[in-house]
Image 1 (cartoon, rainbow, N blue to C red):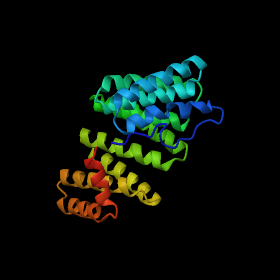
Image 2: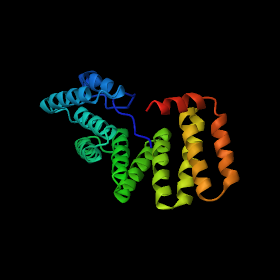
Image 3: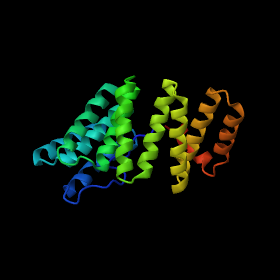
Image 4: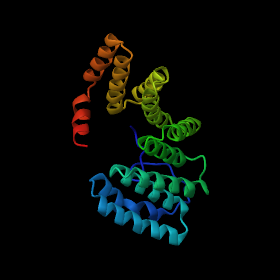
Length: 224
């Protein structure tokens, strides 16, 4: 499943958001990337206290989102849901309808689905997808479509799952994003096999194998 990128990756943000915020949060993001979760938690909480003190709701919401990502990486899904929800509440005080809202709804939806709360989780993912579409951010649409495809497949709604995966595949191919292309082709193969369409499943698996960055993609997956 696709967690939407947080502060440590490029994100559109209002020009009037506190500039020191992004820099101040970098140590926590760096710790998250190398799975030093204790260090990340300390840094994020320190940054959150700073943004609370200065009344910077925008950057506070992004730190709360990063705390959700940290707890989700640790497998503490209840805590992840709590922080993602708190992030969304803070953000909606001034930045409703932004790409950050879509990102946080995607992440909240994923955490809820991972907890087994498929109905509210899928609702958040669908809101994220609609918002990315409204903002003309097709790669965000593709990420949420992968996640929705997983939910629909688990529910047994295989037609909707297939449509979600196919839309994501078309978008990623349009933008030349090879790593998710491999993952989506494999998901389509699993779905076709589940439906008893073994020839089509083999075709999807073969296309995934033929992707130019396939070895790098699977090697990266083995490290996580």
